[in-house]
Image (tube, rainbow, N blue to C red; front, side, top):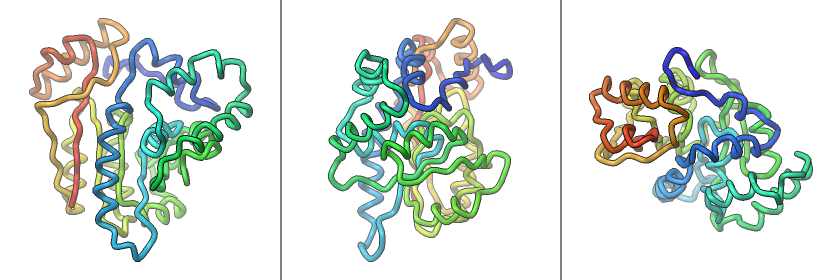
Length: 268
């Protein structure tokens, strides 16, 4: 539990050698926001790709807080989040070593690769998680810079020059305007942002940074997306109070037992 907020933390599952602990730990709480991101990010990526004139390499997607490349798996492969839960919590992969799982996952994802797959790079401070995503072919590049406390490295700045879309699901509670302030000056193409953000936190400071770079942000606040079940009553109380403090109504959302997120789309 984060004593500063009341929100439970799962820090131990985000930097393992492979994603099995991640899925096992989150399964009881029905963590589902990547499922909602799959359709939204495919729409955004297709619309952004349509802007390209074909004279240079297609713009890349940067998945912020990418962890094990789950959003990349769902964006570029014919697979569902439910299938990933079944794969990584089921008996078929339980006894494999990480090295054996990596080899099996290479074949698994290669066999489900979609035509016209996007070039995806990941940014996450969890180096073990990004190493897995690179090893199995989910990411084309990965960076572990902590932009909350420092400036981007030269390799990340170079990669950012080719990015056309930034995606975000689970990191909206952890990254702030600092990360976007650090990233956007290195962009050399029009960059869109598609972000799912918990209703317990304000996205306004990031919206201001995006606006300074010519991006207009819209959100359908009448709709929300379930993220996961609360771990306990204390966490639910925190969420309900946080949502109300932002002037939102938790009825039939947080009061029903789940975190909910809003989808923000920012385009130039």
